[in-house]
Image 1 (cartoon, one colour):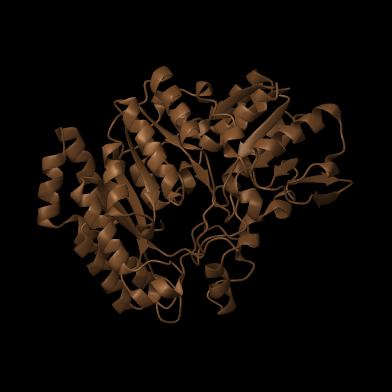
Image 2: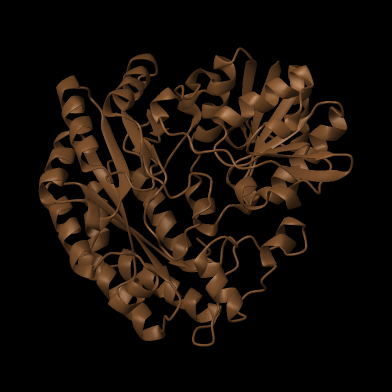
Length: 473
């Protein structure tokens, strides 16, 4: 079949920080789906309306000229309204073409989403196997009840089939269909080189942070690609697309230490002109591993530290200590790896004093970059949302109403009896100002900037953070 996969234009509903940064990274999930469908024998196209800055009219014209037999749309919950508007417009243009929704949103709200007639089918959970079975069934008019992990309508009823098991061997999944996009059209403000690509080397996170959804698309069971498999994809990107930088999007890159050791050693032996960054936890690194990662080209590690107060860290089940954070960052600095930390303000049990502790801790750690995000009561499937809903801080049906279009705010900030959201917002702005407007930090940033344009860019970002009306991510 002829299938068109669409990543709609979501800029209008991006977080405030994302809108400032204006990053445009490849739609990795769609490219995986495209590769799986193509391996199954289907003809596949990809339209990234965000990257091409397409209006609905322009997207519709492109879609109509392609004449797809099936349309796929990727969405998260905050972007669902825009995705639905896109689907409605395309359904009016091509009323006989079935539209399938996929992405993280469908794992959380599969049945409610199918209340909208412009959406014909939903893929729930990991999509590579499910989408192939669904498209085959549509093509051959087969019984959909036999396909795990989908939601559909039949006789005016919404039917959801049993969940599909997670893919155990990630090496069996084909590499993303990089040839279906122009990778050079993407930009990321923090990348060191223009020729970059994103990768995921593992799925699932075995940890239990209060805000994570255990039933999310990738689940809690950690599954990883082998070192050889990762190296083969990098070799493809390096040799065919001249990629010189990899941004690993794994939730927790170093869960399996031995895998990373093997990967780093193989990468060192290749002697490529390649650098990379990753995300992990401060309790999953040690000095020896950091040293090896630096030797293999790792130039930045992102750590979620979240709070500078030990009691808050325990309550949110982060599973780390401040001492571990200090050690991890010290090792990174020793081996000249940049550090990007993430902090959250307004967490459960938080007070103004604990937020002050968090800001002070960030200053003590002195990473190259950091964020101070107000806590969002996001996704009904996690314990943070349940904690807030049980105490009346957010309506229990908030997200159901949002999906149905009754609530318009995709980023509801957590507000408690102790902390109003305006106070958290104020501390977030204070934190950014204290961190990024230190004289020593500014002088260091100026020294690192390679040209006046780059310096102007960072000054604009810093000033924009201070004067944002609301910080929501």
